[in-house]
Amino acid sequence: MRLEILPEAKEDIVEALLWYWTQQPGLEDRFESALDQKMAQLSAFPESAPVLFSSYRVALIGDFPYAIVYRIAEEALVVRAVWQSARDPLALFSRLDLPGDE
Image (cartoon, rainbow, N blue to C red; front, side):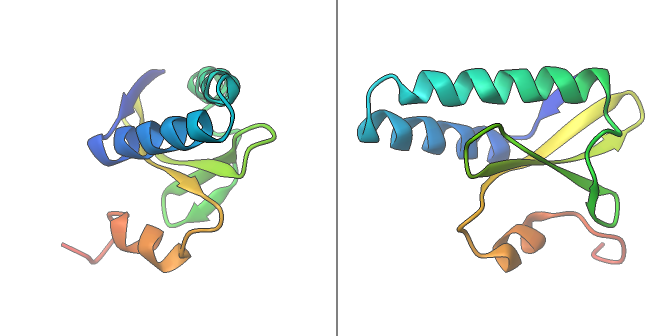
């Protein structure tokens, strides 16, 4: 399945990579590898992660306190966020396109 990473999710990824690099150089490579592995797994098996809310699913990223928040749309897996688990979940829900929000 084609993978589409939305701009805000790309920003999440960059922030995480920079943070891990400042903590311990090389740790950002481990995070990126774990993220790439999970994205490949989700592309192959998009329904393998549990539903978080409405049409959004959530998949944990290896040993890191991050999750990929995505939905399946036609022929694409659309990544809406790469969310750090300590962040406010209400901020995440405000980012999602939920039914009735139009």
